[in-house]
Length: 276
Image 1 (tube, helix red, strand yellow):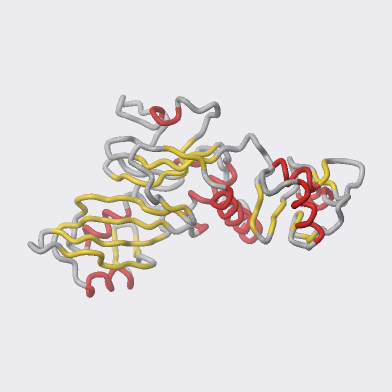
Image 2 (cartoon, helix red, strand yellow):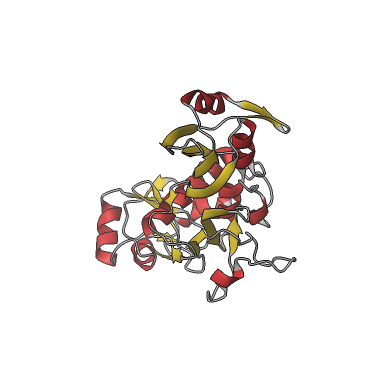
């Protein structure tokens, strides 16, 4: 694969013209794509390409524009789902509970979930048929951040939040959040709204951490996953990623692959990350 990638941009009689490939990928029109190439804003396999006659193989070469990765394979699909509570993060639940098929049955492609949200947790879930990208995003060693909004029982103090930032001891080892803030205190002191960001993929880690500091979770929503944000997407709604979102995800995936290598098989990527 590496040899093919190193060769692809230098082939003059094989592959497709770079500007045609960029246009087909939806980056810009062919004329604008030519301008991007001439201006030195296009990279193929990590090298800037400025020759309009350059050809690439969309199945093997890695292309980026202004440092942002471009997906050349039209068969790869990427969707963002706002998973409701009560739905299992599985394409087929053996116990017959509501699963993700109700959101994907209408799609032409077979996709799978990247990571999991437990049945009682709602929010952002990425669905794709891109196994390589899914493996990087779901594997905790690659450090992709997730942000959650939690409604917890009791009045959380800034001191408790600092404990979570410093790290606490759980049954499976020490764990700390990356960032956190108190969003709202209810007047009766019964609940607190708190935002926490972390990159751990341990099973039910957000719930376990908050329970360990005396604030069991009453409601939990994942608002962001890496560069993806839930925004105003309604519960149960599904949409394709934008070109910008996809470029950001691919850039993360390729950078991780280049610096750390493949950490294992990408089969079953939906099971690599535990429930939050």
